[in-house]
Amino acid sequence: MKKIILVLSIILFYANSFSQNDAAATALLDEIAAKADRYTSLKVDFKMFVENLQTKKRDSYSGSAAYKAGYYKLDIMGQIVHSDGKTNWTYLKDAEEINITDNSENQADMMNPKTILKDYKNKFKIKYISDKFEANRPLVEIDMYPKVIEDKKYSKITLKVDKTKKQIYSARYVGKDGVSYLIEIQKFLENPSIPDTEIKYSNNLYPDAEVIDMR
Image 1 (cartoon, helix red, strand yellow):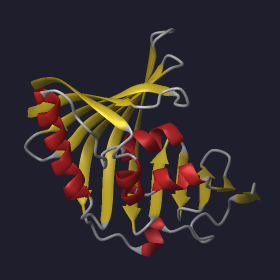
Image 2 (cartoon, rainbow, N blue to C red):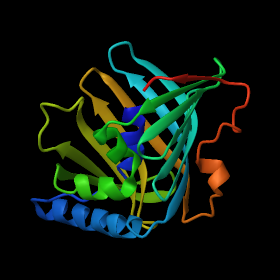
Image 3 (cartoon, rainbow, N blue to C red):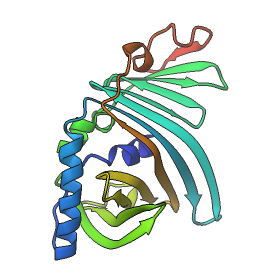
C-alpha cells in the first residue's frame, strides 16, 4: 500500500537537472509543483496496473484517493485507508474488519503532499526521455531516479506529464523485485469541496466491522 501512496503522491515534487532537455523537463515539473503547492484539497480517480516482469502477469484495479488538510483517504484493492498523518484506519471490505496502525515518520510524510513536495525536491535526478502524443494529449515522458538508491525498493519512477493541463497523466514505479506499479489518472479534481465526514475516519462509517488496534 505504501508503494501505491508513493506513486500517487509523486505528482508533487521538484528535482535538479543536468542537460538542456532535462532542464526543460524540470521546468515543466516546477510548474506542476508550484500549482500543487496551492492545492487545499484533491480528488483523484485512477487505474492501477500491477505488472510482474518474471511471470508476465498483469492485473488491473480501479481506485480513488482524496486529500484535505493533512487527511488522506485511499480506496483500492478491497481496502479503504483513512489517515490523519499519525494514525491509519484500514477497512478490509471482505473481512469486515478495521486495522488501526501508527504511521512511521516516513509513512506520515508520504501521506502529506505538502511534506512530499519539501522532502523529495532534492532527492531525485531527472532525465528527459521524449515528447509524444498519447491518449489524445501531448505528453512528456520523464524518468526520475533516486539519488541514494541503496535503501530504496525501486530503481526509478517514470512519469508521463500532460503538457497542456500541467498534470501528471501516469506514473510507473519500477520495483527492484521485478514488480512494477503503473497508475494512470482517470480524473483529477483540484480543490474540490470534501466534507469532513467523507475523508475523516469515524466509527460510524463501518458500524458492523470488527476493530483491531495493532498499535
